[in-house]
Image 1 (spheres, helix red, strand yellow):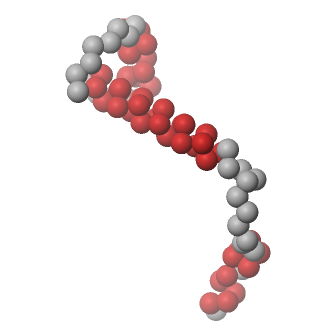
Image 2: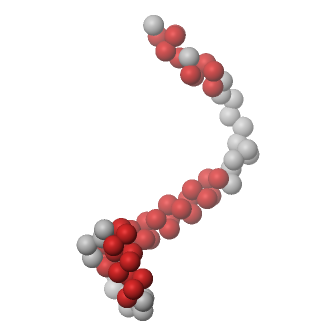
Length: 68
């Protein structure tokens, strides 16, 4: 999809340098991917303490003892 947007050149140049992106198109793809990933992580953080799973971490950590 083609879209025309006005982005300050200094912002583009710094972002390309930091991400080592070879093209502006690749830079935008990286930026969009990062935004999506960040938001998904934030959504998952909302579940912290709300999901009750019955897992005994001690038994998981010592699982090698069971297979020896």
